[in-house]
Amino acid sequence: MTDPLHQFVVQTLIPLHVFGLNLSFTNSSLFMVLSVIFGVGILWFLMRKTALIPSTGQSVVEALFNFVKNTAKDTIGTGYESYLPFIFSVFVMIFMGNVLGLFPYSFTFTSQLAPVGAFAVLGLIISMVVGIYHQGLKWFKTFLPAGIPLVIAPIVIPIEIISFLAKPFSLTVRLVMNMVVGHILLKLLAGFVFMLGVGGVFPLAFVGILILFELGIAFLQAYIYTILTSIYLGEAIHSHE
Image (cartoon, rainbow, N blue to C red; front, side, top):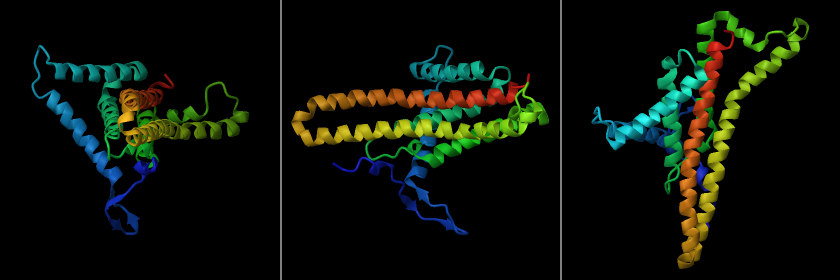
């Protein structure tokens, strides 16, 4: 049985170093690009012939978009429309990254701390910019909740700052750990099926069921990532209203 952790090894495909920085194109980079291509391609294919009476493909895309839209509306509230393209893009990118990683010999970039952490940090930066845009300097009151005596402000403010900066970490770890554990389990079971040969019919059926379960997890993790990003944006916009 091959090493189940080998599927998470980042491999350089096109070496590139600029001013001492390693900007090489890796298998992780490749599958990030593929996630964008497949995500946009599938959406375009399903929506290429829109009609008043929607086809099955159009209905699927509209249902998915409305699902993300309602999530953003419920969590952000007033003004959610401005951030819907970003939120929907994040959902599609994460979901496609999760799904592509289920194919043999593929790579799950959502199992890596760097790309997922970059998404989380981007969401944090956007929420900061949005909060300052809507509330001005009052946004910094986020780090000193109302009713807190000024005498304990030197203690409360650092705690609030650490809590705020921990948000990308919580987003990243939640997604990465789910993807890593699920894929390791699939790899182990697939290895047992291969060793059992014909006798692996029942384990093979179980692997099929597990793949369907992983598809559900892929969707759920993309949803969780999306809803938490929406919550952070909502807090930035309406925290002092």
